[in-house]
Image (cartoon, rainbow, N blue to C red; front, side, top):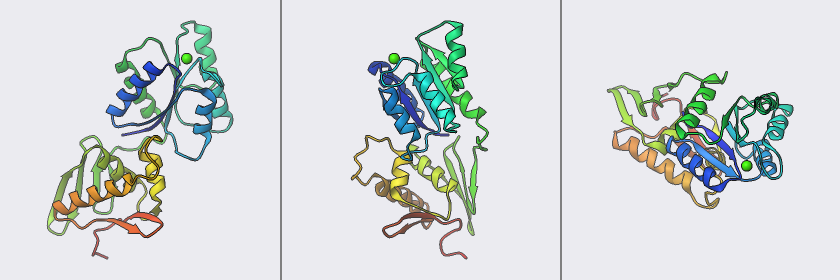
Length: 236
Ligand code: CA
């Protein structure tokens, strides 16, 4: 399941490598090199982060202090501390500050990914991976969307961004979702805010469904956003 991740790390090279590895897994990653900036992103309404990876030594605000602030204000997302310090006392301090886990530098990227998966599984909100709404059933593991129609079951393999968009729609059916919300949740902050990535991606998804003979369940609500219908269009 793709996550919206905040990475706070001031070592550019390491940050770049971590970001690349996480993005390759389909995660959406925002990176900032400063603790205070990281805290502002985490506590803002801009995106609902589902995991934060935070370095210990940072300009602006230390990693443990950032964790402490997050917990004090009631943020309950998983926090993974990165630390060059190996001493037990430091690790305890990090965990006491509210971190869920820590990783000592240097680390292998495989280990980072394993920790991320473990933290994801531990989340109380961790859902059954298969999402089902009305006739639509999407399995993020296989990337396969299945749609029950009068003529039988139609199976459609979805590509990376289509999967993320479908997941978001199936988690938020029927209600109107502003395009800006989709952009904030599914694309990183460096995306040009005026570019029409959301509309383009929605178009691709509709086209893919049409290629399988299906009408689009995604309605455009003029000047308000998008709405995913929990039924086959044309059926009551
Ligand atoms: Ca550092």
